[in-house]
Image (cartoon, rainbow, N blue to C red; front, side):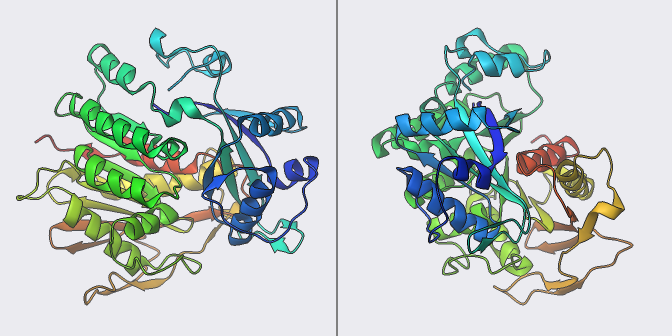
Length: 396
């Protein structure tokens, strides 16, 4: 239900073309001006962290988008509402309900930067991207009902949802209303079809908390990265919520604690009618798949497949090229900091590590990180999709 045309371009070159210079980096929950864009971009570039923000001023956004679309080297990547350009980009195997067609496209601008790229006093420790848009159609989840009504004819084996973060550009009243309608629509999806929800960068804690309490019990599986995981915990009073941000590589024990808490507090149990039984967590140097026991199979292969596609997608290669990747995952770690976790030492001959905690199984794998990535866009989606492809859901 979240479809758009992504314009992918060098962030520094675009901001320079807009006549902007690097000042003091500062995060903004919503972007209102070019100055806000510059401040937020350098803030996240300095951390090497991915982020996505809503741009409130329609005219200014369109001016920036026009500059980006004309800039040398701009690429268009398919990432809902289907406008003419997006319809043109779709593969013939992608079915588009006639009701989802609209006269104009929704554009998202994706500003990429390279590892070590510098702009003024800022230097990116990792390659990554900063996304912004003035997207009201996806923010209002306009195509959700059309999507769900199409499932009876399409008869899917799996449903993947995304785009709830786009609701941050809507009023609180509309957010509350649409979130209730989202849950109602999800409940209309035939029983037995797994539903995966892919999260994205957010700044509204109230909206995130509502998603945790209202939407999580209605879906089967989640996909998210380290920023989304920590923000989720902060928004819903979870473990390690006092941590303002990750200091470098996210601590495996802390990540494990938050994943455990999500499944224990909001996942399926004998006393709770939640459908949530699986979480696929991904950060640059390692991934973790956590599942409630008895509901999923082949998760060792699934987490390994997700890690493999992270390397091939970033390097734009068919297979892992050992000369273009590096191993940067922690060689040893604790499995928990909330309880007496065990110490794990990685074995290169058996890179996927498995451990258990109160009816939940964790699968950890290091990632072979691309040294000079060609792509930073859509890696999280590719990781989750590959993991789902290799997963086997047990019917209830």
